[in-house]
Length: 252
Image (cartoon, rainbow, N blue to C red; front, side, top):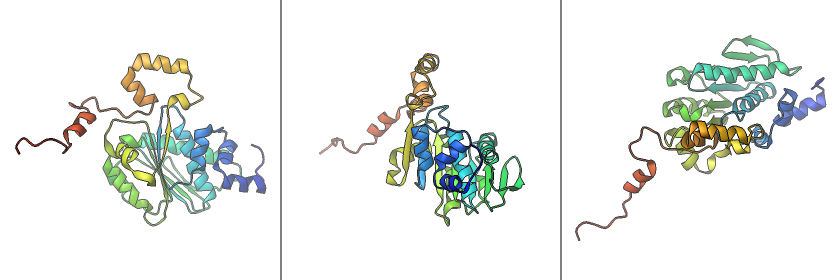
């Protein structure tokens, strides 16, 4: 990007898209929408290889640099996955000239001179309960995180009015991510990004993947479709139909 000046530094503080460009990302339309969103609750249902780790990593780095005293928690089903997101955040922080220096840095934690902290956690209810005062929580592979983990991380935002961003590809019609996507109401901003809306994925590649994976897996991985679990004896539509109370009585 070149030298950081007062004018473009203020502009980047106000517009995360400019920050993303400064650290080497050219966001597409949907990515720019997510970067500029101010919603406190966001669900991102996106295809594989859309760049969800990259774009949320940029969001977390922007928060840490331009919101002094920020507390950012990165969580996913495993420490390895959380660690990949953390690496992205640290990479973007290092790429920005003039960013606050680190006062503490490890493979899972980063503390900056402006008081901001970034913590990477594995997806265990037991290991996440000790944290509080988060201003931003990012949950990666959220459809694969259980309800207990959600219950452990949401209270971190209780006193800060902080943001919670959950990103994932679908994983069946089960769990909190599916339920919130379908029944969560207007409190949640929902962003859906199928592979056909990603300019970096070719039609030829998608045709090949559909032949290899089959329709059901392909639609889950690349089309943002919630399918029934393969282990279920009955599909969810039949179960819902069986639960109806609208039937004629046997006896009058």
